[in-house]
Amino acid sequence: MSTALVTGSARGIGFAIARRLSTAGHRIIMADLNPHIHDSAATLGAVAVQADISTAEGRAEVLDAVRSSGEPLEILVNNAGITRDALLADLTEEMFRLVTRVNLGSCYELTSALAAEMATGGAIVNIGSRAHLGNVGQFNYAVSKAGVVGLTRSLALAYAPRLRVNAVAPGFVATDMTDAMPEHVRERIISRIPLQRPGSPDDIASAVAWLGSTSARYVTGQVVYCCGGRSHG
Image (tube, rainbow, N blue to C red; front, side, top):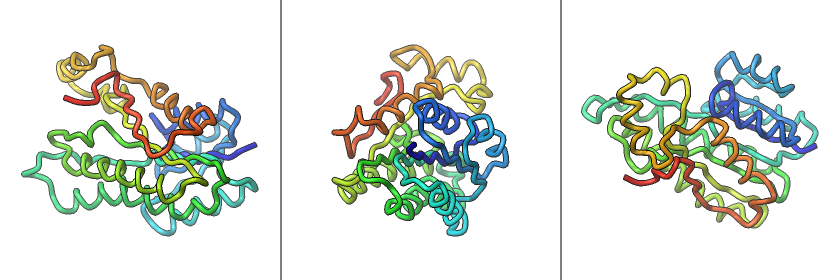
């Protein structure tokens, strides 16, 4: 049985990805700073690692869990991320540095730490965002996710032909956070989506599962927009 690691998987999109990969027959390691990771992992029979992957200590815990699995890592999904939204005039240096460190820095550092543990033919899938095209009030987040795109393309070149590296860029996805938005704001956003509905965590999980599978064995260095058609504008 092959092993898949999903970061930021206590809830939402990350949990949906872990569940989908588990259904596909992978042994799952789930990593998250949120203590809820233990309950989430238990529902899937997965290994839980409660750790802050933005720190060297946290990444070491994840590396230990991978090595303890006894099998090479076949799929790495870098999903962990945070937001600290503010208009540019109100954005502090601390908010900028924190978001870029977690969303971009951790993605690079964890991938670098785990690449040697991955099986030949393995796949890395980074979770970006449609926001890398630019979002008002999300300057730091947009920059961090644009960095993930550049990182994905660069790592694809660096690790070829042994590993494939791709990214999924979700658009507006129905989560606890977006459900808490004022109804008129949600409706305005949804009206701009050609498919006329928000995405679901399972929609994102399906794209990730495909990129991690042999069905995408000739795909690397790509960004798959999973946004209901609203990739621009």
